[in-house]
Image (cartoon, rainbow, N blue to C red; front, side, top):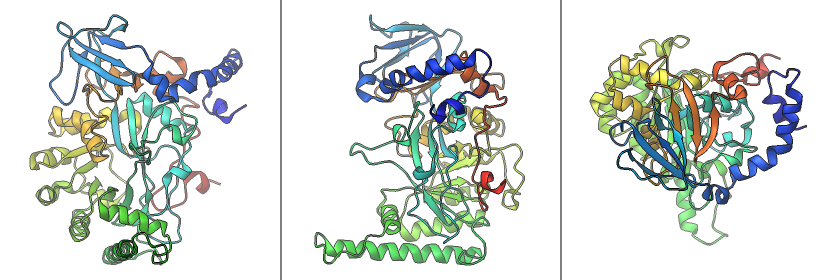
Length: 458
């Protein structure tokens, strides 16, 4: 029996074993079409009718129609003027709200661990190689309406490794959920960090100044490696020995890999901006607890921020001046702003609640909705595929019981590429939406500066 059956069946009662075996026998029949682009293209159209639609890229549409098919959005508009294909399955969603699938720019679900204690900069490490797609965190994320994640290594290193962008399809392997470009290349960023997290005994830096010096030296070395490759051209005799870390950093220097930079204090933010100016790489500031202090400087640099919004920010001295109003301040300064969970810091199921807290602290409703959808998509360079309900984009969407920012609202259904991946009416899905024994017993998180919780507990 595959381990997935044990992981996904947290409450086996008298009637459950038969159900498990039935699902196991049907699994190959169910999963293959879900993971096949050809099968998705053959899906009949489906029309969601009567809901309030929140396109994000435009104003809300009361009593709207959203038509999807082949994994894409085919049409969107008011019910009175939007044609529904004759062959479409019609789904009555009167009284409901539909918005794009939520985009989390910073998550740690999947139990993955990145760099180890051998050095402070390990840009060659790929978090992809340690993610467990059967981890219950993925089901909890779908229960929260999330459909795209940027899964990160931890922040205990100046460079902790390469992130991975994933779409939360139902999956058997990590390859089933990674985003790829037209050439088939996996899409990912590079996780970097500064501040106190990376300050340890040698070979790690002991001060902020040494941290910046180590990063500068590594980027200089990457530039030299790139120069050697250019000079060698197609001559194998002149090419330097292949270096996976240098390859990753060259991609950063060339602008094909985005740096996702953990940072809290205002002075650390300015250090990141100096490094970015010096080496010309594209960066997203993550957490940015004191961004409200240097919002104008961030705006002048044209750098976006992915902020965390928590109502209990204790645990780190660097967050002493954390403010719920950071999103509002950044909005007023003209800084592009997304919101993330940093799951498990914030449970993925509470993602919309965090955006509601930002609104309470002064962020506009429109920008807060954008912060959990389209703004994050832009930071992952996926805005042409996800983040808004526009014709031609992936049919990733969430059906809500009411207003997204009401604490009484529930995620009722989540769709990825037009396929339902969460339904609150399903007893198993509901378990992962509301908690209970088994809803997350297989999860552990990588701490920023220590061994994974699972190892530390042994």
